[in-house]
Image: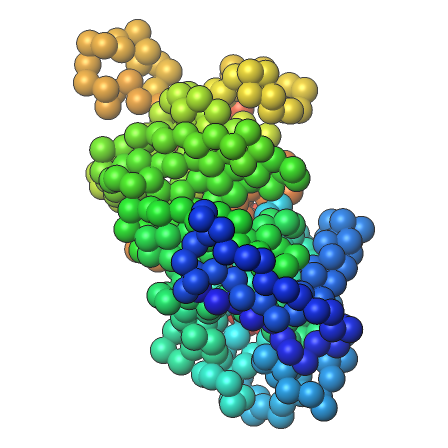
Length: 444
């Protein structure tokens, strides 16, 4: 692995001496080799400071002031005259930001950033027609609401090599750094202080400000790039596949502890982590059960059932208070489950009334509790309290909205749904709005 920063920085250059190799250092092919740190460290510091001051409903807009007299890692798409293409692009990748207030779409032409509530396109970058590549972005990860993003090429005509992570600063409308690997990058996760890069069987953890390699983890085959990190500052928790089928590895960096959890008998296909890193939800290739674990001691705290037949789970999401869990799958139904987690023991701050709501919320398995242990486990399972029907087979991801008892659903066809569930009675969710976010002419 190698990492480089833009040699044509708009920031003043400063000398950098690579640290000496130690006995615990990775081999030279996987080690950072930086020539200049001033560009990315200044940009990240400014971006994080701006993000902490930013309002809760806005995203930084580009300044379009990138210099055109120097050769950048990636030229500004705004400085290139491109033909106007009014056709709808193909979505290659979708992801929410860390607080679910925005989402990013990677397309076969570039990427777009949207605000969730209200839904609106904040900005887009179309690379089609430039000399660097075909424009396809297969991974785009936001850092909360600031101008720094991580990009990986994708699609039939990728904008960047599939083995590189490009650090994009939208204030400068260009890439200010890159991380190169010997194999394809499967996914990326960002924190304000860390970049986590996931390969097929290895994970790398970097310091954000200088791209220094801090940790590398071996995993079982991980074609989906499964990995999640907590977002509470100063206490990073990372979860990823372990070294055997069905196993999850939990890294507690503050206490320097590693916990292995045998979550399922079959292969892990999806998981989610609360922002504080205390709760982990997992699902396997069977797709019938979702299990919730305490990451501190690895104990199973709850098990819920999506359905009886096999399904591919596309996404899992906790509500901000860990009171609810949302699940989407290829069966075309989004489920919302009521979680009965001991929030006091976990230190989760739930709003007043949440405990009472949990006690009175419907549970499709509660009326069968008197025959637990008599009938098969299926009949005493905990089922979802609310559901929303979608097109079967189409991939959707889900998150909880900022409005009370709402979920936001994104489809790979460009569909956007906002739904509301009744916490007291459950049942079918109410559709509040539905749009196609790819159609710029549509008035959201």
